[in-house]
Length: 292
Length: 275
Image (cartoon, rainbow over all chains, first blue to last red; front, side, top):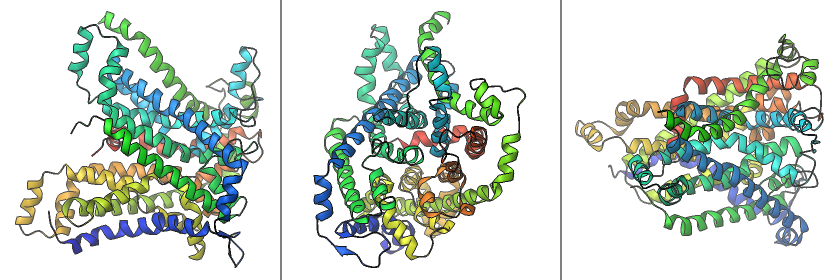
């Protein structure tokens, strides 16, 4: 390894400059903007101190947004963390045929655009003539208006994300799954351990580092993926029923043109994210088994 | 063997159910794009419409500047891909080949950007693009997307796997760092660079949110943005055409995936492995 740090700087400069300019500078810019009242076009910005924050913290809206966010995260954790975890166990250790086929097929939706997924599911969920309404009709059920009812809309949007992300998370979990030595599982089977016991006693501890990674990206990226269907299909509606901590920043900036509130939400969201990452590093990572 | 299979049977049922749920929407999208208006509503669930019609694709070609959209999308994705790959490789080389102060901090700082939600960044970045007078141009879309935290991470992972003696031998031979990067490191990690580039390309091709803010004129739209035009009238009757555009948008990623499947899956698998 060379110790010539000036030369190292040369190689690192393009990436570092771009990261600073388009990732870290905007974070500071948000903090600055959050102390002003502005509409993005007017030439003057009015300094309002912490008014944006106090107004926002006192509003009933914040509670709704937080509740929605928790609901989004909870459903996505089931669809994109728990299910892929279990499926990767099945695919990695319980079946011995067609594995490559299953892997490729399940991964396929991950390569498609969320815009495509959104329009696809808008038609699938169409309450009047969509395929799902026909299938529900076979059982004499009437299709609800998926994107118009509060709570249902969150579920419907989560299924879009679930469809797109399930395979991706499955593949990442699978990488950890196949690293678990087969002999250990075979030995446990010889002792008549049930699959559930094998999962709990061997798989869970040995794959926990990857599981935490998938858990993290499910939460962090999940809320980000939600932006596309929410923006295309509901614009946060009905009555802010599908808005969340990440989407509301966009709403305040580009729908309501209140940069101060938007920046204040951005600051709060960033604090939530950092708190989440901190807690994850501090408490979860400690209990983890690392191979190397 | 037979008993083995009957033991596995239930798992295969579960897996096949998941495969069905994953593939059916794609199949449905493609088949609907070949249905005329009557077939869309009368044989909604029939995956093989007969006779298939190409009218949706023809009317897309007629009423939309489709080739422009394809070119716009491709141009942005290509520039983003090349630049992301370049900045990632260069930075990763510095992390592997050099020893400098605050190395870990700088690396973690780059990796952390991977977890910053995009909406936190869009307003300040939008204002910056406005100041630079890049709104409604492809460069406004491209500029903030030239680096990737994940790219730096993956490239560093790959470069670390190069045996140290190989680099030391090159140094003893008097090779300069840029020669080592170009002649020793790059040829060894070519497959990984290619795989990461494919991922960058697919992701940029699929991108919806950031271009939506920057591009306003319809002639500057990318394919995913064009899709949004079919949503304005909800419950509209243009489903065949919408699905045709959706199919066309999905074609490049699907083809790339089919041809480079192993490659892509392996890279994705790597991306979760911690270093």
